[in-house]
Amino acid sequence: MTTWITICDTCKRDDWDQRGITLTDGEILADLVEKRAEGTDLKTRRVSCLMGCKHGCNAAIQANGKLAYTVGNFAPNSDAADAIVSYAEQHANSTSGQVPFRDWPQGIKGHFITRHQPLPDDQ
Image (cartoon, rainbow, N blue to C red; front, top):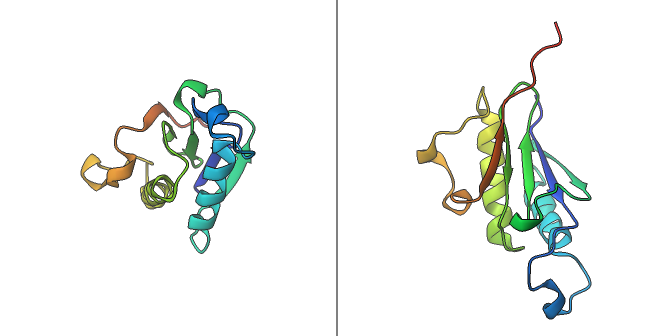
């Protein structure tokens, strides 16, 4: 079962205009997450908008049959990318998607936006 990290590449933090950069904060974070996830069993993808604009930068951590999480309020930097990928690796190694709080990477704490139950089987 593959764990996916879905990164919003349109996220812009409140001061984005003032910083005068051409890439969105989401694009910067997506680049960092993709690089950090190389060599792992995780898959990454970019989407244009996770509709969490008040919580940018956002990512979703998902796998079939497991709890799914949206995380956000990240600065677009390598510490955030490390935290997201480290948590996603723990999610991948969990049978339910739930990771005990004591095992969370420090950088992920305080960044959870939503948790979604797995979809029911169609049968």
